[in-house]
Length: 404
Image (cartoon, rainbow, N blue to C red):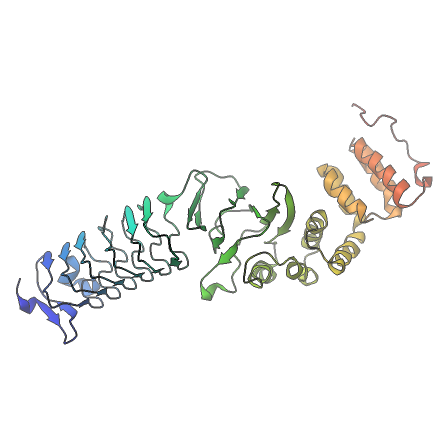
């Protein structure tokens, strides 16, 4: 190894390594490891270096400096301040690295797809870039020694499967970075902890029919700037529920609806993004009802909102009620088959079911041997319409506990 192996400009930036040694000690006059110096572009020899000792006074490792290289060990100086974009991206032989205490910034994708098993984040660290540790599949532990504000970019720790807890979550500094249960059926119920204040966009996209339950104050959903138009849940039929302080479900919405792709995008992000401080904008969500084209989807949306009318305006309630009254007979029969008495009662309070449809609904309840529904329907007529004339032609059982 000699001085001709290194190309260093007047500012102390190492721009090229021409040597053939696999274990390298950089000269003392290096101040910055420049772009692409040790990456594996064009299979150059520098990309095959396995061990590097960096001298004191080096302050920065620039972009893609070691990307896709064979580096296994690197000794960094205490003077280092910044690790640049993609500096150690796809370093599959790099299992450990000691980040010096003086480092204040770790750039975008700095260690993404690397083989790190443990990472120590120094106390002076101020920023971690987007996807800095994305898809580090061997990463098992993160130690952060600071207690101040640490700015963390989008998906910084997404797809680091070994960081997941037994519930399938990885939560770091009040942010949910990933969710992936080991085993799940077609429907998944996800109960977000109270401690979560931010959720990475897209982490539920690959799970069919996700049912997410979160605190009523609702964490913020984060995303890349280019993802502003994308839904944060893509699976059709997914729902979002909000629990109150007692743990009971106070509100529920359907976020992804079949055959309504363009509307889904606006429902999901429109209702989240218009509250910068976090929280779900139910009025914005309700405003999309008239824009749905599939009648079945409109029924489902209306049923859920009337069953859980949290922050439901009078105008939105009137729109839902008016629509459901047009299909009250089919809706009533569906609820009888599903034995969904709670939803039925919520709709009955709104007088959804029309007087002229009640005889057929009662007969249908009898046919299905759901006599509790038949009796509820009778009571509904008495209280809602103050009449009993429709019962004269019906042969109802006296005992609602009738056995077959």
